[in-house]
Length: 229
Length: 273
Image 1 (cartoon, rainbow over the protein chains, first blue to last red):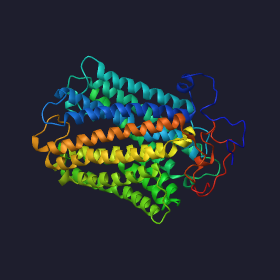
Image 2 (image 1 turned 180 degrees about the vertical axis):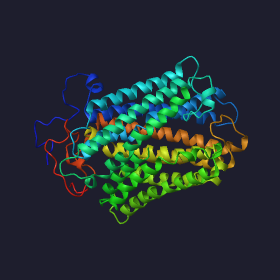
Image 3 (image 1 turned 90 degrees about the horizontal axis):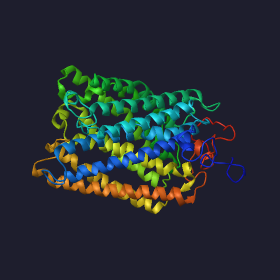
Image 4 (image 1 turned 90 degrees about the vertical axis):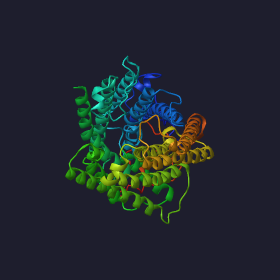
């Protein structure tokens, strides 16, 4: 086996010098490992914002009646908590971070099938996240429907529901592309000699999830569009 | 989105029991089964919104069917642990607490999947509690298990075990204090997404809020420990957990193209030692 001590010229992916320098070495990276870490930093930040909002709700609920915020603020807080935690933490969560990092390694591949598409997925993810945050700041006020955007209330409330659903729609593209990438990777990039039933079980779980991401996310996206229409 | 979480747990449990996973094919195919049936259960969110009696019956049945492959996985994890030589390290602690919380979340999911009980607790904090047990206790704890498991591989450095154990304890206690009371007041009729409530729910709400503060302090401690580990932890060996999958065969952190030579593929995916 190759270890760092045996091969003197060994350079890890963290120390590798590419075309770009500084922060651009990360945001223009096509290496699946760096993209996995980028997702992890973004997701952990959103997770802590979401957890802080959850804590605000728990403080509000410590006594009956108004404790620290107005009812409408509370509606905004639980909606943003849901949007952040579901669309920006849980859905990308494990598959984008650890899937990106370890799926190619576990099946003996160099990278995912479409490294540039992978980088593009991360950019879309960030764009969608910025839209979700923008939905809080625009003039009609934060959405108050809960993250599920259940009609009919979501079609009649005056708040920025359209911006928030558009954000979820854009974030959906990131999931779809990641799912597509993983399916092709698992079909095409397995090391010579590795059959489906020679794969470890984490790639199996990612494979099943990728099909859901590819087939079910468009349907969710379309239903979100119906809210706007 | 619980599937990748199950995948992570399926990798971690055998590593720390020094055993092969029990029932490899059953676990693999149950993933596909959950994905397949998962497409068809959306109706279980809508029992009270005026769908027909037949549709409610059908969606309820499908929802119960999802429980079967999930339970197969839980059974396989526990069978893998049975008579294994268990090495309790931080990733393993998160993995077994995943199983514990997932069982609570899953069985309360059956209560919600059944039409009769669902109509009673629809849109109460019972649903909130069930959801957080599955999503946070499931997916969240699996995420923490995965970070603790793979961080030495990702950065080539190790975190402090002692702080990791303490943070795990705080997280586990805080989590249950935060969400379990919501089951109780949910059955009693506390609606979700309300900022106000009648005074009889206050004791449980206070317990829940205290749990929230405990949980967040545990999370901060956990992340602090991981960041310290990444910045100035001791260098990690290539295979700190005696894992038997391919990623532990390459140095930590991996090189740009992962494998400097074509890896030799073995018939059994858990034979790379």
